[in-house]
Length: 232
Image (cartoon, rainbow, N blue to C red; front, side):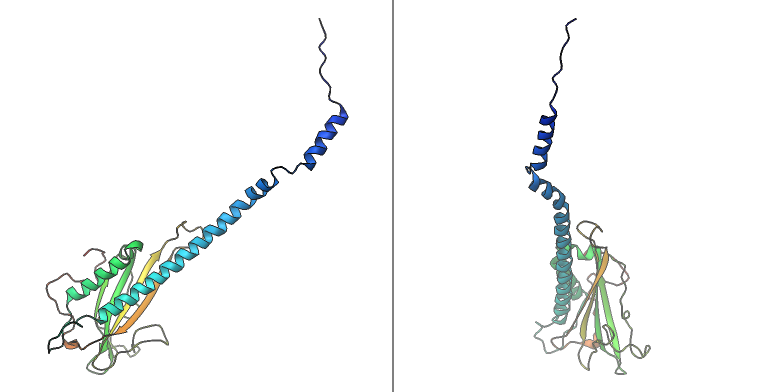
C-alpha cells in the first residue's frame, strides 16, 4: 500500500498567521457599533416615551382649559333682555367638543371629565350648584359632588388644591373642570409606569346667567355623574 503523506504546517507559518490576526483591525467599527447599538436604541426609545408623556400631559391641560373656557361662554350669544338659563344640551355639546379635541388620545374611553358650577348659596357660602361628568374611568370629584357647600361643610371654601383654591363671588359662577386620564406608555411599562394624569382648570362665566334656575332640563341627554360612558 502506498503511503500518503499529509502536508505539515511549519511552526513559523502558524505563528505568522496568529500575528497577522492580532494586527488585523478589519470590522472593528462594526463590532463597536454592534455593542453600542442597544444602548443608543434604549436611550432613543426612552426619550421618545418621555416626549410622548409630556405631549399628552400638555394636551390634557389644554383640553381642561378649553372645556372650562367653553362652559364659561355658554349663553354668551343670547341677545335677550332676560339672563339665559344653561341647559343639559348645552353641557352635552361642550363635552362633545372635548371628545373631538382629544379623540387622538381617546380621553373619554380612558379617562373622566367632571364639570362643576361653583357659586354662592343663600348664606353667602361656596356651593357646587350642579355637576356633570363624562367618561368611562371610575374617578370621583376631588372636592365634593353636586350640592356640596360651606354650610354643611365648614372646610369647603372653594375648589382647587390646598392653598390655591378658587372661590365664586356674588352674582357670578366659576366653571371648574377636573380631568383624569389613564396613561399607558408606548412601550408598555418598560420606561414609564402606567399612571393617572390629573389636570384642573377654572374660568369665571363671561356674561350674566340665570343662576337661580341651575341647570335646566330641556329634554336632551344628561351627562349625570352616576353614569360612566363615552357615548353621545
